[in-house]
Every structure is written in structure tokens, then in C-alpha cells.
Amino acid sequence: MPGVDIAGVYREEYGRCVATLTRMLGDIGLAEEAVQDAFAVALQKWTEPPPNPGAWIVTTARNRAIDRLRRESTREARHAQALLLHQPDEPKEVGPVHDDQLRMIFTCCHPALSPLAQTALTLRLLGGLEAAEIARAYLVPEPTIAQRIVRAKKKIRDAGIPYRVPDDSQLPDRLPPVLTVLYLIFNEGYTSTSGPLVRTDLCLEAVRLARALAQLMPDEPEVLGLLALLLLTEARRAARVGPSGELVTLADQDRSLWDEELIAEGHDLVRRCLRRDRPGPYQIQAAINAVHTDGDSTDWAQVLALYDQLMQLNPTPIVALNRAVAVAELHGPEPALASIETLDLPGYHLLPATRADLLTRLGRADEARTAYDEAIALATNTTEREFLEGRRAQLAR
Image (tube, rainbow, N blue to C red; front, side):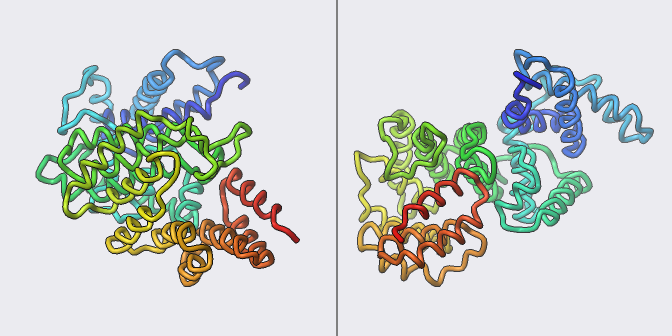
């Protein structure tokens, strides 16, 4: 409908609405169906968005859920209907922090679920991503992701997994997958698998939830490390896209557009983290971003030293690929290219994109074109694909 950006409201409000309805209903599947019904009603009725679109969606979804439950004849449906009809405006707190979305993350990241199910379900429920988008992000078939999401919701329901933040004694053991999904939510916002390059709503929501987690666990260094990493990356978001929507690399960004308050806050957190003897992977990644945002240029020797430290803790192909960028800046493209030739990252477009850039700098244009072709074929985001096509077109023939 002209003038009504339903898709924009969906992106911004879906996760919050599903989390709120889950708290009301106690059933993730029913909550998601009710919110989808409410958006379908909005599509028919809105001539312009109401003053508080999220509240409208929640109210409509609640009413739709009641209607759906009334049509059911089971004892469980009647019980759920009674809870909805008589629920107080302010529900009783059931965890150490009052945040529906943080509860949702801990529910989705319950150890009874597989890691892929944890992240897929969180991205679906909090990010509003469709199964196809999640499948592209994980380089797996769409039916696989769809099945994992359905099974995860069923397991949460059948096993009675509680919709709450665990108590203090359980938090440390439950923390790693929660940090992972917050990191992935932010990454999906910063470089979306499809649509616009940046989804600001996901970036801001990941930062907000990381702040909430830091308030909940202020002495947990990796929580502070993740928050610092997100703040320092978020600080550069305004410079990441140019006037025409094109991707702007770190080296070409207008640093005057960076958010100095977020940078200062991130640097302060990094200093707190690095005072510890053994900083973890998120803390080291935050330190790398602190170097990138310190002054007018990047100290690549310091960046490489930090990547060497990160490789000892987390020796993954993606860390090795990122390390190669620092190697190229310090020692040239040839040793950097040699360091990535054996990496195995099937379907990951940044590996051939990095090879293409290094080959270009070595003057090996024909090989660079082939690498760019591979990267372009793998890139799922239009903005990234156009950037790579532009770089390929600049190659001398």
C-alpha cells in the first residue's frame, strides 16, 4: 500500500513482538503464527502506520491468538486462552532481567538444541529472517534450515524448556551460544545476506541486547569483549555505505562520519578487558577493531600481532583469512596469498574476493578475473556483488 512501509515495520518490530507474545502465550509457535496474522491484518487495514506499530501488532496478535484458541477444543488451548484473557498488564518477573528478547535468546540457546538449531531459530524469531536467508548465511539447503527451525520449536514446547533467563548459577555455562547468536545477529545487520547491505534495526538490537547482557554479567570478560566489538563496529556503520548506497571499504571510509562516543566507550571496554592475563576471542577481536579506530590510520603490525594471538585461541579459516589482510599490508600480497591458498571455505565469497584483490596487486589480472567471477557468483547481497563487479571491471586487459 502506497505510503505504508509494512516491510520496514516488520523488520523493526517482528522480533520484539514475537518475544512479547511468547511471554504471554508460553508457546513460541503460536506466538509466531499470531504475529504473522497481525501483520497480514495490518497489510489490509493500515493506510498509515499507527503511532506505536509494535503495540498495535502485539494487541492484534493477542486477539488473533485468543480467536485461534477459542476454535480449539483441547484442554491446553482452553488453559492458554484463560491465561491470555486474565493476564495482568505487567507480568510477574521470571528471571534476573526484564527483557523479553533476552529471554528469547536464552530459550533458543538451550543446550538441548543443536548449535545450528540455536542460531537458526534465534535469527528467525528475533531477526525475522526467512529460512532461505538463514540458509544462504550458513551455506546449507533451505529445507535443512526449515526443518531445524520446526524441530527446535517443537522440542522447546514438548520438553517444556522455560522462557526465561537462567539463574545466576547457570549463566556461565549457558553463555557461549548466547554470545554467538548476538554476534551473528549483528553480522547479519552489518552485512545482510539479501536486500540492503545494512539492516540498522538488527545492528542496534544486537548492541542493545549486548548491553543488557553486560548489565546482567558485568564481571564476565567475554561479554564485555563482545559489547566492545559491536560498539566499535557499529561506530563505523554510517561510513560503510556511500551516497549512492555503494559499499565503502575501511580504507576508503570518511572517518569524520564515525561515532566518536561509541569509539570512546568501546576503547574503554577494551582497556578493561586487556588488563586480564588471558583475553578471550571476542576481547581480541574488539582489540583489533580498537586499533582500526585509533587515530587516522591503522597500525597493521599491532593488528597482525593480535590476529596471531587470536589464531592460537580460535584457529578457524575465517580468522586465517582476516589475518592475511594484515599480512598483505605489512609484508605484501605474495606471502598473504600463500597463506590462504590452502584454506577451505566452500561457498564463502570473501575467500575468492580476497584472492582476487591479492592477485590484482601482484599484476596477475587473468587469475584475478577468475577469482572475481567466483566471488561474484557466491555473493548473495546485491551491494557486495556490485562492488565486486566494479573491482573486476577496473582490471587492465
